[in-house]
Image: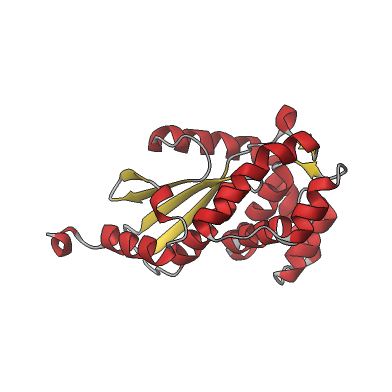
Length: 219
């Protein structure tokens, strides 16, 4: 479709608030006239990557309680009672971001991969920065192991440029972190304020439909 509107989504796989916003992305994906483009933020990469620790657990848990209260998105027992006490778990945004990019490149399944990564980590407690685990998740989505690995390697090499593009998007949209959603339509970029829609995917979809309607329809 020409002049198709684009919903830009800046996220990080280890961002709990992005997990809280997942139902909003599901609602947006149901709109055929809307293209969704994912932008990994690289929140935990290079010197910012870390191992699971008591300090990290104590930092994120108050946020997670609030995320569940506002969005209804639950954090599983395997994550809260297992992963958050397993100090061998790596918190590195690069591998799961590369997995999303690989799935998008192969079959246009970037959003499906992101949603699977979020559920795998926050509900099932799986180590989503582990390459073998990512390959298993890709297989669950029906992706061929060899093709996924090749696409994953290519995506990994392109991550620095991808993260830079995300920073540029955030600057242009006026976003301050993750998650950030911005609607691009007719050459203009409009920041969408997510807080009011957490736990209200149907309302979010209605707002998107209104924004996507031709100007004459809103007159």
